[in-house]
Length: 320
Image 1 (cartoon, rainbow, N blue to C red):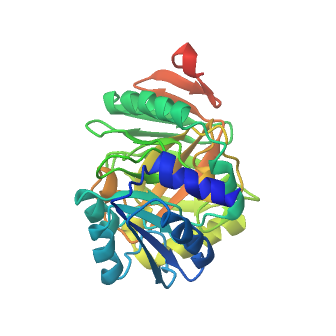
Image 2 (image 1 turned 90 degrees about the vertical axis):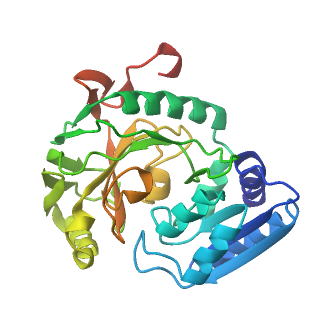
């Protein structure tokens, strides 16, 4: 099953060609899975290269300069790492040079096996519908039964799709895929966000994490052990790590909540917010931290129009 998923990623997702170079970036934690991609990639490309580094200290920390240079020189890059390199300058620069990149932070064999079950065509369709809606909207309000009530501006910001299909020069996204995301305008978010499913650096939540937001910054975090772990993760990185960086819609019907945010944030009928860096997808805040928290069954208003009610989509009939 893992070989099947690796082959699907290299062919269906990345569209690797026989004249291309594929770079697999991994670390001492996920080296085994990284080598699995490396061994199979040789069948599809001119040259496969494996780069193994030490685990980064946090999600969003830059890779070593040598690895960053290799990323910029490859045609296809797979990031099979324990900490995410998605929101790094190295990833952004490599895409600007034309590399097609898929990021798989904290991926597990179970998560990888579900990739082969995903309907990439449906995910692609749903991503583009949601991204168009986000791009054309000016403001967002999110409400949940557990106490979330937060509003923010997305005026002038562009919704980005994470479709799982990265075949064009400069394409980037996660695997597993399936989200439409946008960077809220800095300084505009106010209210309360209650994370109830899972949180990066914490995992599955025994008790919801309640985040108080003022002028775009998480000024208060409460909720037991999970909240304490989140505070500990944020504290080394200063106020920029508390920026309300991302708002996103989960769109993958094959994904399930496991405590691994790589997959959790893609689950259909969920949303997530991220704290920290958003400089790689239209925002202005640069931080070595980017942490996602997932909410179940949200109600969403775009420009005062309800488009999701407790997780149920209110869009065109064909994608409900």
